[in-house]
Image: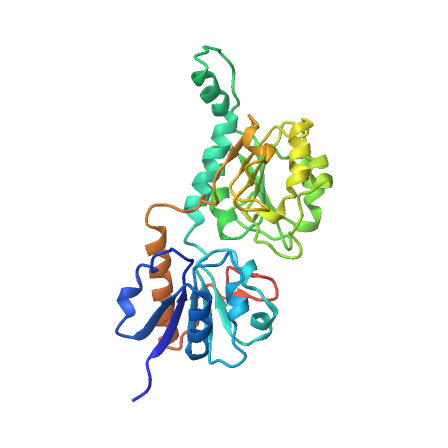
Length: 324
């Protein structure tokens, strides 16, 4: 009799077990771990590793010299924290949670765009001060959004923004035709596109090419009425340069869900800016998202058991999963 498939699930300390895996308990031996010593002991006997604790370096520290791991699944869209050399050089297949968070993030972005267009931050401030102050606000029809990252999240964002009459263009590694956007340009053209964008939305993964992409030079190309929305990865934006742009009036506002340092330090000037909305890396976390992640893995596991191609395979040299 062949041995059962052994799945090791790495959970963050204090985090509950990933829901949804009950469906395959009869098909696999599932071990949940969170402590580094437990992980170190479990990995050499694992066939599959599922990672929910993707913000720490514990997996690399515990990575065994000898193992039989065939597949690693990240329950996140971004996999930058998992792309350590030993994994990248190996023949282990890596998959991610592409698709699970698309709609939630897109709705967050639409909400942020409406928040700025309708000056909702000022409404809230005036309400707290018991002030009645009539103002005019903006129409979104015909305004231009530039989405940096034309993957599945970017495409969903574009669908919602075009639904309210906005013109939406995007940047990707190369220019291409894509019905979700009015146009997709090559990433190298970013600075040429920024001056015309009323809203700039970052949905790109963190790679060597995107790290620090939005710096002093990039903000210098944006027009003073533009707003930045970052739902991609924090290190894509240089925080100090963003603060300088906001304080200097070079940028009209920002909605930020991710940051270079998380949690955002209590002394960050971003907290007290009246034109900034801050959320705690939660843009895509809808009610039931953890169960959806478990169910997505189960669907892929059954493909793996049938020796069929897995969904959401990550190109380890690029650091993200492509649409194909």
